Length: 291
Image (cartoon, rainbow, N blue to C red; front, side, top):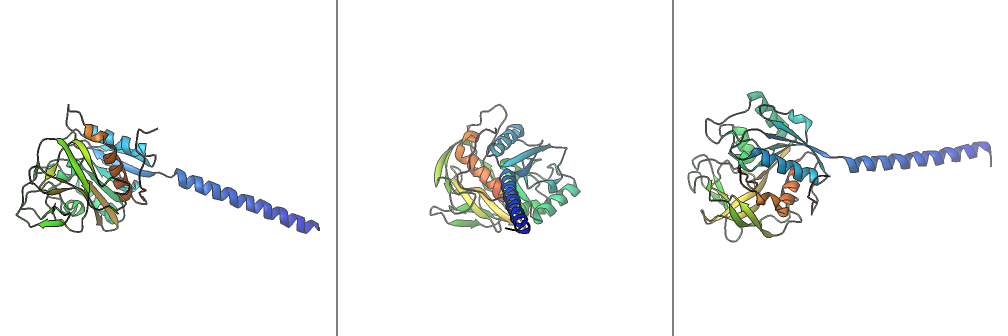
């Protein structure tokens, strides 16, 4: 064997080793990549601190997220994150607290351009007079004169409630109730039971809004409206994705056993991952305390 051939084979072996090492490093990097999330809180008629603690603990417990918190009046630079989680509620009336116009415009551009938005419980009450926020969330704590509503019939059929009809927004006292999965094939609901008993939660009825292009994921039958009310839904806004959950009620000086519901934790984590830019939920997301 000539020296040139030996050198050629040696270089080939070294080249293969480098390629193998590069592949290992790439896989390791991919495995370690985490989605970035920011929670916006600081104003809410609910116990926003308890809600934020739940969100952060649940997401970090999956091992798939790095979570920051921006407490009003601090507001984040949305473009730095894969998903924005709104736990802010400045009030559902015309006097409700708004964000600065440039911040609102920045969120619109962020979601329209492919960023993710998650609206947590009472955050769908916020920003009555922000048209694009109403378009993003689809349904909110709005009077029936504001827009259409959505109900779920006894056979799982989706019923559009015309503007001006149905009940105004409201809820009874927190209580245990059964949640039903309406869309069983969506990535957010994969691995979730078809129905389960959810503890000590508010069951909101009478949500209204544009109600266009929504995919209803879960519902519960209200003891007030006597019909199925949407609990979780998703919506595309431009290139971005929006996930809204009506679950997650918290109140000052009250226990919140609803936040300990593993099925809700898994559903929420998968909803956030679906909404996040670059996120792809997997069935049976592991939830628990962050390491």
